[in-house]
Amino acid sequence: MPPVRVLIVDDSALIRKLLSDLLASDPEIILAGTAGNGRLALARIPEVKPDLITLDIEMPGMDGLETLVEIRKLYPKLPVIMFSALTERGGAATLDALARGASDYVTKPSSNEIPERSHLRVREELLRKIKSLCAVRQPRPGPGPKPLPVTVSARPQPRIDVVAIGTSTGGPNALTELIPEIPADFPVPIVVVQHMPALFTRLLAERLNGLSHLEVHEGKAGQKLQRGQVWIAPGNHHMTVARKGSEFVLGINHDAQENSCRPAVDVLFRSVAQTYGANVLALVLTGMGADGTRGSAIIREAGGEVIVQDEASSVVWGMPGSVVAANLADHIYPLAAIGPEVVRRVSKGRALATAAARR
Image 1: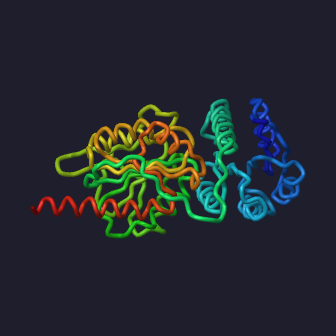
Image 2: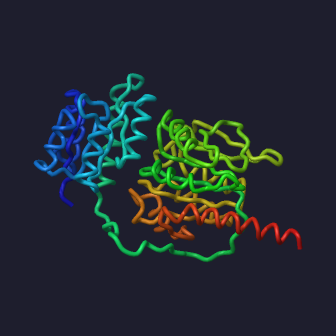
Image 3: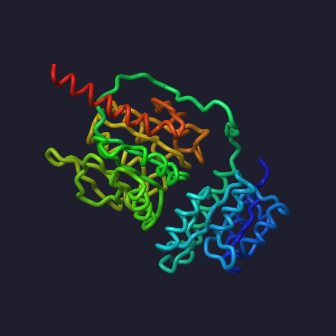
């Protein structure tokens, strides 16, 4: 594969130099050009023909969000990574950008970080996301029949007492589509790991809470799980579920990263399998990497089921694709079909369990 051509858009000459140097350290990526504002970026795209754009959010004149909207009109499939500040304002703007079509984001070095470490973090995140978003993949289907669900294995369906979701790149938009489809009388709790930094997860929970029939909150240690609730793991912390008597409660810890992630999907999946046994429905949605694969194995060993998002509807098919490659997926669904299927399975499983108990 030829080197990935990247256009850097940022009003700060210092940031443009930093990103240029980071890209220069990888032979698989080359700098196609730079632009100091949104209007210049739009003019440069047809000149330098980038494979991907890094886009600052706060710029004078045409800001990053306005520029993104124009990019999406002209180049709907061109990957765009937002370069955002790790602040409340930056987090809110990043969620806005993702909702408007940004592919992913990387947070800028902050004053709380040691410069050498922050540069290393940005380099690792940026290069990994560039390569993942620009990897050769099957073209998405155009207009025509919608992709059909695929059943990989047919096993008895146990009663579902919890739904556990793991996602990363593309996850905020996937959750924004999925969670509002769940009705207010949904009879089980939902627990979620979305790979995002601290602060961003709270903002995501608040945004989903305003869009959904269910209560959506950032996870808290000791919180009792109840029906009609969605709990999102807080950034930079793992989230687990444990049983205390007849109640199920959340645990929050700062243990070592798993799969270079904290929160990690594997940590959550492992804990729900240990706590709920066979009564778990796990969803692995769009995201890069393989987080969630080992946890999916443990869920299936305990008798639970695993549904993954299909490749055509995923921004990156790393996480769900890894589960499929390991033969751990019971079903593969396009994103639009997952919400209704979750509701159907939970309702059917609990109805069957209730009928059996009355016999």
